[in-house]
Amino acid sequence: MSDPGTTRETHSAPFSGFASGNGAKLLPESVFLENEPLARKTTLGVGGSARFYAEPASIGDLQSLLKEARRRAVRVLLLGRGSNVLIPDEGVDALVLRLQQPVWREIEQTEDGRLSAGAGVRLRKLCGEACRLGLGGLEFLEGIPGTVGGALRMNAGAMGGWFFDLVDEVRLMTLDGEERLVPARDLHYEYRVCHELLNTIAIGAVIAAPVRENEDAIRLKLTEFQEKRTGAQPKESSAGCIFKNPNGDYAGRIIDELGLKGRRVGDAEVSSVHGNFIVNRGEATAANVIELVRVLREEVRRRRSVSLEPEVLLFGGEWREVL
Image (cartoon, rainbow, N blue to C red; front, side, top):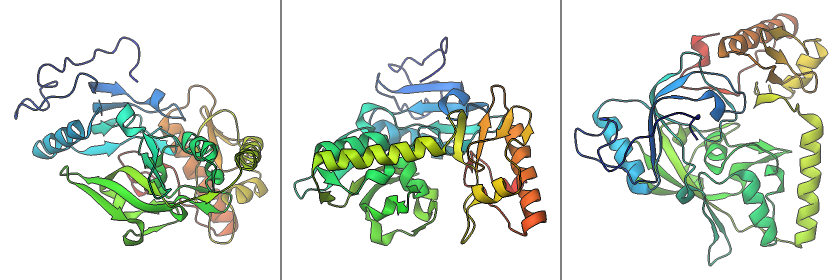
């Protein structure tokens, strides 16, 4: 949510002039803010503000925001839980949408045994609900600090599994406000990307009927995955793995072998626990992180002839523009 002291809009009137041109209004539960700081909404804790920021409380409000953004030629960006993203220090001149109101966090089991989950559902909650229902196969998601929407956008994965291994259908919305239900087989996804979701908004997913298992057995697997992740990753603020793994190798292993753990720019530092994590030692800036990414890429390219590509998204921008 917003920082203390931030003024919220009164939704009985058109919101902040942004949509006043066509008289659109938001529900009282929706949030609409201007010049909203984003750093605290991310796991790394750096970056500037959004020109416009909204948390729509309904499908209708999301459609209203998208249509007005299109009418006014305002760029639209999606922010989930804030992991796997780097917010630029200068912020973003855009409407930033966050699907974290209750309507986006609903989970239910369908009549045919599948799971339907909104984009705002945290992956840990999805795992917990599947465990409660005695449905196995989702355990590898335990501990990934993201939401269903982010997992779809990035085809999140861990421990040899990918999110799209589980997905039957994706509920999405175009930037024109049109809802669609798309079979996963009709989407084009690969390591850390679903191409159709680069220019649309995932609002939910239907998970293929998981394997029915004993709840205690599932809970044991969840604990094992969580312990593996906890022991192998830093506790300090980070955005997750900073680089994609190159073919046949691991970015963290290469960085470790080259003695680059502990390399630092300002308060951005390569973790001593895992070489593929950049942590915030307290007062890091996005510029610090970008410079450290540049240093690591140059060292790895020079000494190993390997080109590491960032996995973390440069929010609202392209890495090629800054590296």
